[in-house]
Length: 275
Image 1: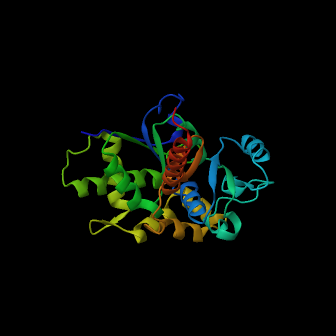
Image 2 (image 1 turned 120 degrees about the vertical axis):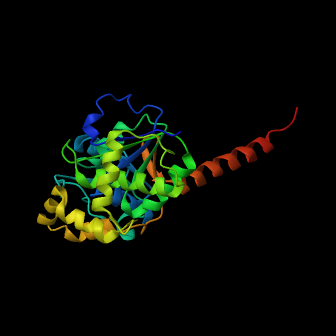
Image 3 (image 1 turned 45 degrees about the vertical axis):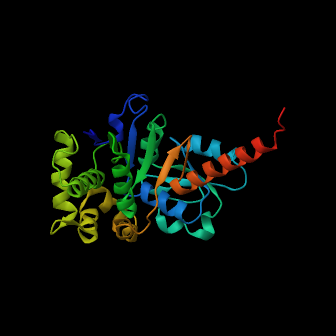
């Protein structure tokens, strides 16, 4: 029976080895996970998450002309960065074929802490069903890290985690298919209040939650109300970002690259003369 654990805030991961060799789902629905998904879907070559703005700047300097500095602190673009953390900034014209060096207040900390994980996927409502499909395919223990807000609990990430569990349980029609504890039970109950209507997950309910929750209200005060609506939409970007070997790429692109390497290796082996 797969064991599922929800970590309500990334600050609770205090040891870098806590997530070593684990299957990890990183959640930051407002907004890093959503924005990264949009960027990769619009042709960004890769995303390099950085734990601080200074580290991000240093990485960008060594990454060539095609690198962009991206991210925010307290919801606002960092001075000297090319792009902030609104998904509307990450158009094809802006990011196609670019390496994005990304640092945010909460989300990239969660990703950085997952660098020793067996697998780390980046989750939002925009790719909700893709996350579900992957976890069903995985059929193994996994941990959901809620990025939270300023090292504390935030409603929207916890509700997302609960929604994932509710739909997985519904798909499997077996209340005991996944082993969970009190944190996961609480997340399931909260998600039914804030993200479900008539038994189904609902974008309208999600938007209501965004407008109610602390971080949603803060983003609205900064003028990002359209971001809330955008990030509440379900399955508008059916792709799976994967953090692997220090960079985030879409799963399909990682698999394409691996297949090309295998093909190239086979071709080279054929060219070796027999003794």
